[in-house]
Every structure is written in structure tokens, then in C-alpha cells.
Image (tube, rainbow, N blue to C red; front, side, top):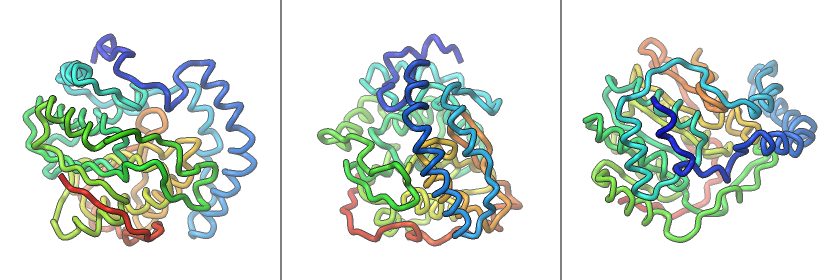
Length: 310
């Protein structure tokens, strides 16, 4: 992939530290709270959940903020440049750093021979959903994409979420309507199924449909949503499928990391670093049958939310 085609105009750096100075300032701001409050709380949560306490990776996670890099050598599709040009023309802006976008796309492309649809849990403004749907169209892959998000400014948090307040992400105006409008411009409206509501409520509505997945992207940030998304996805991913956890090695997302490890505890499956703070889980045939995830809703505050399907 020629990175010159991935111009800065396509990337919205307001949600992450995009310059060296911003990264250094972020590290200074987060450092005391991270090491003195969030890490002790995370290790306490692991102990209460019966997980091994000796998880050393979060101790060095802040260093990863200074240098975002690709950790896996996976090929990218030839149509990525064309897809990014189309997204730019449609007015889409990606809220992930480019290295994580490339990692996400590479993981998705590695599942092109696996049957099943796609799902994104935590779509925010829909940019990566639109990218995956556009790539599937250009690559002539017959896959539908389930797009899930609460699409609201206030989300429930738990003790495990540390410094997260539930107000980190700003939804202005009719976000779902804008996603559908951009999907129509990109000629992928028939490939996307957009659901508004908490994961817990949405999963209750679609559980009986029998969906199976070749690729899942979980970018839920918080403990409860990540727990629900993992439980649902692990029960429905096929051998050879990939699950990308955008928050697994993030410095603000220790609740999400804890939820992922809890869901994977009954098996020997573990995520591997993918790109930046993201990680990837491959579902091999022999392991898929041994995954016994916790039930959906185990991490949720069971508040009602209106779900909307399109």
C-alpha cells in the first residue's frame, strides 16, 4: 500500500495524540492516574475474576503511545487505495490512526476465504464500517456488515473503567442518518445493517437470526460493552475468523482488556498485538469448539435502550 494515498485529510486526529508533542503531553497527563489508580484497580479486578495477576503488558502500554507501529506482517488488499479515495470523496473521516486502519484492514483481508458476515461493535461515526463495506464491494466479497453502536453521548461505565466517564465520544446531529447517506454515496447501503442501542439490547433482538461471522471489530472502550460484544462474537465466529480488539493495549481501556481476558479465560485463546494499541484473535478450528464465553449481559447495566434497525 502506498501511504501517500492515505492523506491526512482523511484522518481526524482529534481523538488521539497525533504528534510527538501531543503524545508526550498525553503521557504526562495520564501517567500518575494510570500507574497510581487505574493499574491497581485493573489488577484487583483480575484477582477478583480469578485471572492470573501477572499481566505485565499494561505496565509498558504507555510507551506504545509514543510509537504506533504495525506488529503483524499481513498483506493489504490492492483495492485499499481506491476505497480510501472513495471515502474521501464521500466526506468520510477516519477517527483511527492510519497504522490501526491498516492493521484492521489487513486482519479483515486475511479472512477473505472464510464464510460468514462481518460485525463492528462500536462504530462511532461509521467510518471504519463504511471502509469495510466499500472494500468488500470492490473485492467482490458477498458479505453483509452489522454496524452496532449506542450513538449517544452518555454511556454507562463501571468501576473497572477507571478514568473513563462515558462522555468521551461526541455524537452531534443525526449520526445514523449521516452514515446511511454516506453508505448510499459509496454504493454499499445494501451491504450494511445499522443498529442503534446498547449491545445488550441489540444482541437480544438479533440473537435468534443465526448470524455467523468471519470478521468482527470490537471498539467498545468500556468494560460492559466489551464483555457483551465478546460473548456474542465468540459464540458466532467461524474457524479461521478474526476478531480485532481495538482497545486491548490502550492506556485508557483497561476495563475493556479485563473484559476480553475474562471472556477468553475458559480457552487457551489469547489476542496478539496487531497495530498500535489494537490486538487480533484468530479462531482456529480446534479451539473454536472449546471457547465457552460468559453470557451476554454479564458486564451490562441492564438499562433499556431503543434499538433501530435499517
